[in-house]
Image 1: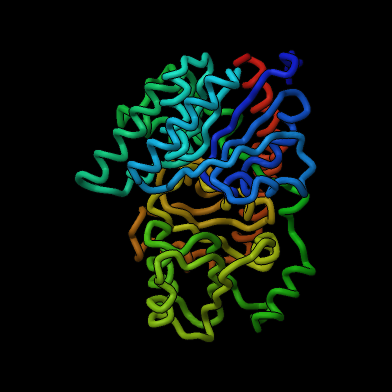
Image 2: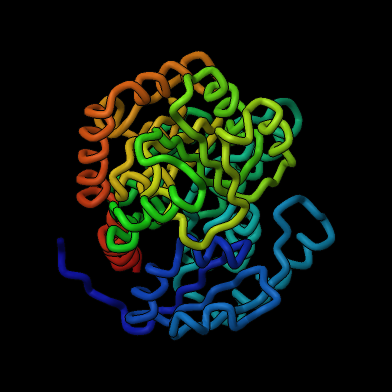
Length: 379
């Protein structure tokens, strides 16, 4: 670890589309950055005090940034950013989410701010076809052209962006081993009390194998594939699905599975409880930038089954911390689940290795340190 030379009170501006992104991925980084720099966060929020409880010495600047393309509001946001950047002359503008990135990088380029940084955390267009893919991919190309520096939160995502012609190889780097925020290994850890408590709440026996999905319920997450694969597994196992139903697909899952075998939790602010209760974590996504939830499960000592796609192939070390299967291949997903179901020793071995790897390579402290070192070199 090299000694960091901090530029006194350099002005940093992070541009993010939502409060949720800030709270889920950036709190640790913001806490460290605030100790050394003058930090502002531009975010789509109606509550400028949403970070007050964290005790962070920073400025929150509310700005309406739509996730979808809304030309009138997008132009208004762009001009607002141009005015802000001209006034403040930030030393670094750092964008985190795609729509916010396009507006922030374009505005910072127009104002000619010297350090325009974006971190890629996944591409919506990766699973799109036709005009939609062309438009969204072109937006990423434009923001990459406007940025002076680029990060990707996984090595395989970096390679994908290069091969797709979105970024130049010499312009994009991966910090540490990847991940936008790493994992808090004090919060995410094996917990026998949580395991017992959750299982009692849901009526799951101590000897039953529990497969867990945790995330937004939509088609790109492959949740229906998971339900179809699980439907062919023998009795003696359960499926727990935790997360908001964005696409209205819970009824489809309920048609496939008996209510006695599948459990739904629509919201939680304590995902670590459900991870501690699980035996295998499943993420059959069609696209992911990295798959932070895989590393959180790993820190709880839980092996994973994931799609063999960019991002997840970094989060899961195949054959050691979990298993990979071809995306959308329900038969192979079922085979992986069956393999885990019938092998307690393998699950234990993989879970122990997954936890060791999460602590070694993906701790939040390590990732935040990598951010600080990168900022130091940038400034």
